[in-house]
Image (cartoon, rainbow, N blue to C red; front, side, top):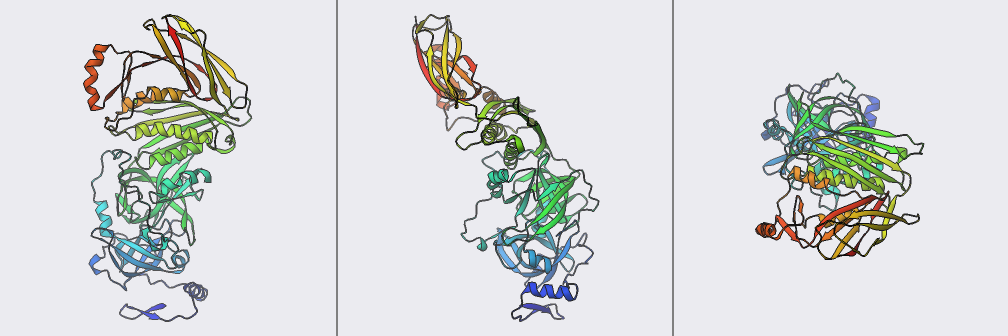
Length: 613
């Protein structure tokens, strides 16, 4: 059906036989320029427009939506109002259903990055194109968020400290996975394209699902970042605008369309990016290089340009940005140096990642993995010797030191990223204090073969000894595809040992950490930042053989520290704390006695016994 307009403005159907909308559009374009039923001036969207009353919205109205298909200038699209969907956005929040008309929208459909495109009726602002119907729909039917709902976000008070946020594990923004079996039966927010620049497709695939769960559609290399590029065109309704999640040698940005602008702030998207609430994310202008049509996933190819402020709100009906405000970022440096003798060049990346409890972990892990897995240094069969630190302004620094070898289908870069991620999340997800990360430094030496080893056997230089004697622990390790080696570790026995058998634990670092780690108590109090940092820094490197004495004395273990060799009187005083699950007791005291470098990622543990005379 094609519609024509009566003098009253009401659309009447005209039958069309064997002729498609696209064919008609092409024919019309060949004869004369396409005629848009836009009531706004074709020179651009209205400025400081009045608000179209929501109560006056009804089927059959026609208006104009504006979005950027290419370049920086918004272009008009005709919008036919189909009606209202009650409570479609939320309780008491109706969605307006519309159909887009025009050569471009009918060809591309509803495009990722189009969300936020302002809709005007009679030059008055109605709302923002923000939702799509299904994934393979044949018509550009869209949901429109009323501008009144978006103004609720605009009028929220500004947050003084945008770093304050709910702890991880209880965030309110992660979108639930859709339950409908047919994607064409869903009304869902228009995808926000999340462009990764400097990332491989493997990295984007590996971490993509975490972003999709938040309503972001990751794409690799389809766009770029040019923060030094000045974009003289002002931001107007219909302009593209980007939220920058990472910038520098690696760039990640999400782009949508501006709905409303005043002298101090703007509203965009018409739906949340993550619905995290108060945020602090760099806000930049953007240029649309092209709009890629696709029946499955049409999106805009975007270059981000100069920074103009910060996004401060990410709510159910809009994201809001404030001009001139600076977002706090976490500076990261990752240097990868080939092992001695290699002719591969050393590479170093410097970038910044946003500081946001929900988005930062996923962005940080993807960026660190990409940095360690970059270009020609990376290989399937390799090892990484990792050092560095995570520096916190309010809790000292977490030391990074471990070796990772490719094994069982897990690359060294992936294992190193998991190690880093566990330490990063231990502080970033702290329940008791807000972490303030000053910087992250990672240095890795890349070895072009697998450096791993196992503890094969352990023996002692003697079967009996006296307190204060020095004995030798001999650990035989078997490196991967190499001959066995014997490591000799001198150990001086404490003068306080009592007569009888003494167990000696010889192990890798991870096994020793499990031995010293306090048992998990469901009701135990969480650790603060300082205690968490101290606990992480007590962990043992995995490229050494560790020797630990297991003495027959009571040891108290708290979440923050182990208290070895407790006198019975002190142990009795501390017993009441057991009921609060803040402390536990073991019948042996584990005392570190020595270590030796294994020169490889080590695994294995063994217990031997010596008699104390």
